[in-house]
Length: 377
Image 1 (cartoon, rainbow, N blue to C red):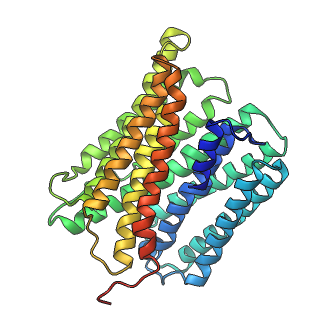
Image 2 (cartoon, one colour):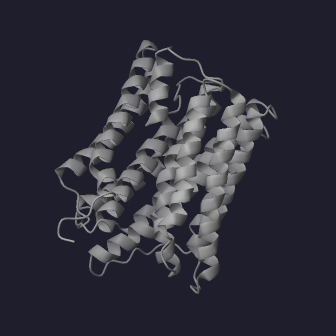
Image 3 (tube, rainbow, N blue to C red):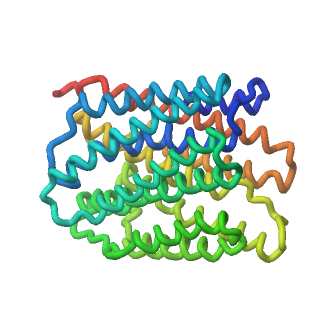
């Protein structure tokens, strides 16, 4: 929430960052916001994936204390010194590596034979380490605009998107099988390989000067992901809200790449930009997919681990709806530059405010549960 407050202040013109807005916004959202959610989920679920003992609280608390302390250093230093920002980033990287070490140790202890999903998680985490190193090099003056783009794209697609997709394709069908008697997801055996390969192409095309042809990769990603979701035959109308919100989140993944495709095709056919999509495609994924999954997973896990039944009440369903409103406002805000450029900043401020409201309301309900015992325990 801190970084969204800083973004709002920045849009009001009250402060000026020592680091380019596009760089610090991307870094903060990837490694300081979403990583908190999904690393916590990995540390919670890895013992189940690998049939090993739970991670001791003292061990994972070190990771999150260092990660949060380093995040504060980064946030404060953005307006003080680029050198201090690098120091904060090194702290974040250290916490990230500590978490990876815990996960690797669980993998070493496990006797589970099928580690397809966990192996892919380690590949994605490796991309996360690479991206952080590239961000640090950028702030140290090594490389320029192209390195910055490569760092952002590596972190967003090869690390964050892959982590969310791996967890989605493993956990959502599993949750569904536990709720609907006789349901089988019929997942493809090799779904992640072509996705990672295409994402790698997407990330590499720009540095080698072939970004113009990126729309071909985007339409393939759209088609493969949509085909896989359809193949699962998810029972949208037979499950409770705590589960169908995850189904809804999944649909934003192919939709995001469809918007990427339309943007790329528009530029290819016109030889320039006739319709400005701004960052609508990125935010369809970041808000529509990642944020909806984070709120859905986070709510379900906290309810379950606090001894409560994982059911979404009206309050929680309202939060799920608010996420979708946020996504639509942000996408329309990006497209609004084609209608009236004066709308843009206002809609950006509205979407940032909605983000803050969303997580304040979610935290008021769910973070509180982490520190209290359920009444009947």
